[in-house]
Length: 316
Ligand code: ZN
Image 1 (spheres, rainbow, N blue to C red):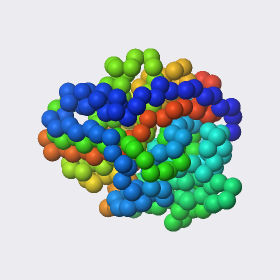
Image 2: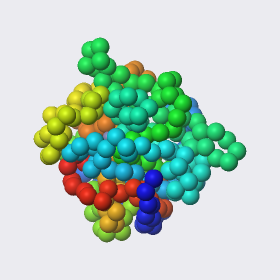
Image 3: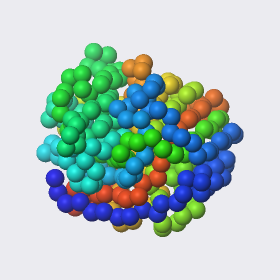
Image 4: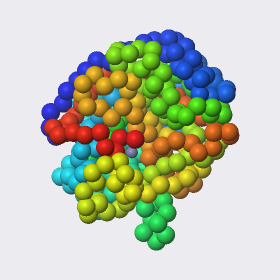
């Protein structure tokens, strides 16, 4: 894996973030509650994570990037979560977030939904990742637990992850109902942080449940595009879009402002217990939508294997 750059992030208190996010969310949702709470035990349903919480040495990693997928896929770009854990100086870290599965392991292209604890010097990795890909039988979504078929902790091309020691502790609980604005749940929080903090970059990660309503998600086709994908229209013609239903459990990472690392500023992937999952765009049911999420700010962002040639295509 190529070089790693590190940048400290602005790290406000949870109490301050709670007030800032509340004011921004109130412009976009009819009902908003934001508070500082003890993180619920994330080993319990519907989460089923390998760790209890999101706390302890919180950091964000942006690995690879969309330029390794479009215009032309770089099949050589394979990464490993245990290696990433060492690169971010947190062996044994718990990771959640969004990325691409390893084409080498799976033999096809798939959305990767991260929930994995890396190995430490004393404990093996616990891989709770999910993968969503296109069902060859009917063109629909096929959601699987990665460890049901594969024993590695690899991924490919690009990923945005929030890492921590996975400990219990205080987090932000965000509960909103009925969307009145245009932005999706994550964009709304990201824009609110940008408006308040400007070029002081704030990064956050967490998990949220789309409790009621439906959402627009995409899944990459199993095969990489035979012809180059040169713009957003090409990418959107290539991707497969779905409307999926609640409850969806969404693993999310966002940064308010790019400190010059060519970051993807927002990335959310969802899984469920009814066979649906993929890359989250937005809910499609503003009248009835309800979200409940748990989030924590990160102290650092690590940029790993940043593409040397970049563009802004396909970052939605
Ligand atoms: Zn994605």
